[in-house]
Amino acid sequence: MEALELWPSLIGVHQYGDANNINPLFQRIFMAMRATDPEYSESDTFYASRDDLLHRVKLNEWNQFLEFAAGAVRDTAKKANHGIWPQESVDLQIQINGIWYQISNNGAHHDIHTHGNCSWSAVYVVDVDPNTDRITNTTYDQMNGITRFYSPLFERLGGAYMDYGNAYLQNATVDFDPTPGRLLVFPSWLPHQAMPYVGERDRMIIAFNASVHRQGVSDEIAGYAAS
Image (cartoon, rainbow, N blue to C red; front, side, top):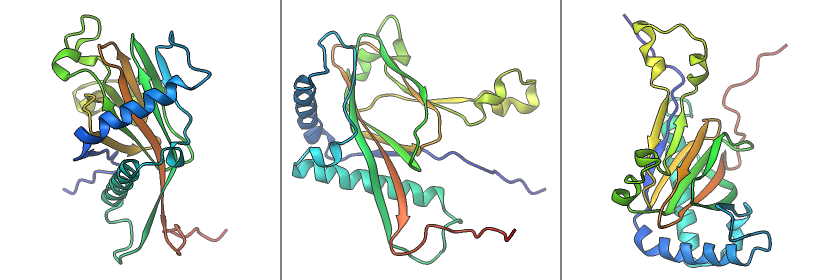
């Protein structure tokens, strides 16, 4: 017998080695930006900046983080396209199409959504309560502030016939604890959400969308049949 696993959904998990030094700096910058935003109110439990941080932050530390982020997208895309991309080496161009930060607390969350106009998206954790404190929340416990991804087969559960033979459909979500310094790179079409969060520290993340291109060569791999 031959068995094929088709259409996998790959999530790249990366850890930024300089997170302990850089995250406090990012935290101060983002808090200052939020404080000077005329649309921000202290009563807001959720805040999202504009997606124009790429050139809005002008620091060497920020540029170093962007290099790490672009490398994470490149490595994840290479892994996902193994056996599909041509064997010969090509120069890749990683384009960050939009990058922003979010701050949440007091039960704020981001409902299920996907991202458009890009092939890959990512979320990087800047700050959150220590894990031992985060999971002791009496309302949300282990789910407090996690990022949840939904299987592309999730919609098949709605009204579907379930028995032991299709038990693989029932593992429909995967959760990631909010770990400072961790960058998750995932397909832009993969449904995900940020669960409600309550903590002494705000849950602060950086998110961005990216596209991958071949420099000087068409992105097209497979040709289209003549009509």
